[in-house]
Length: 365
Ligand code: GLY
Image (cartoon, rainbow, N blue to C red; front, side):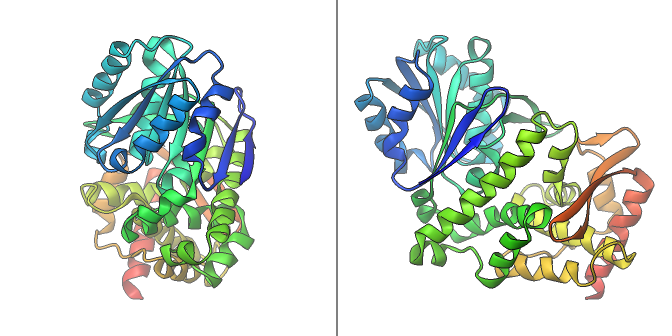
């Protein structure tokens, strides 16, 4: 088991290992000392697989467990589900000292975290991520949210968990497409911060087959990703500067997601976004030659298509809805080399040009 301490205003540890579901009760005991009751928030995919193990662990630790289960899917990350969850916490008579356990992927973690942030003006919660994307990204750093009609994650709060338990054994039950989707963020971490991680992924892609053959190798990669995210969050908890590096590939990626009505995975859209922006930068001689092809190759080796069938005007129009837009500019992450990326405030017409260059360089291939 690997322990990665996060040094936010309220510090906590991320545990990465196996058989951690069995330790949820003990962890809640240790990190939420006032708790007597807990509510597991989960969804209809994850609950049937893992809620019972977690309930048993909570009961054995002397914590009364309740379970709130909602229908799986991004479509349910909405105000109605949040209100149902808050009503459930109240009906279960959770008080200020009690705790929520977020058991699931990114949707569950974001919604349960926001419920914990707002119930009684904030109670403790522990993240138990079960998808690769949630383990390496969304469960760490305290971003919680729901979606609004106007876009994803438009209402939420920064609310740090008391602990994160990433049990890599849970990855074995993911569909291969869902596992691959999480690899988009793993590759992103390599490009923004870690040439060694990127080289490992180029040599041996992170796949379900690797998990079956070599659990410690996957544990090491997940822990390395958590450490990269931790370093960024430690430096800039509330995303005033450096945390924006985590948005590499996201400005064009979010536009692709929107154009595809969220039918294509977030990680794959980010992969396509990373390749498009890198192609645009490379066409101007702004990065190491061959960088776009390297990123493209590693994404494809992880089962992520980087194809983009949308034209530049459609993508630009969609990108205007990005919540990270600052008036008539947007903060873009510009890659110079693997491990060397910078944040550049970019006027919108220039962003439009970059999208055009990135998309047309992709079509020329
Ligand atoms: N997922 C990006 C962040 O946590 O800032």
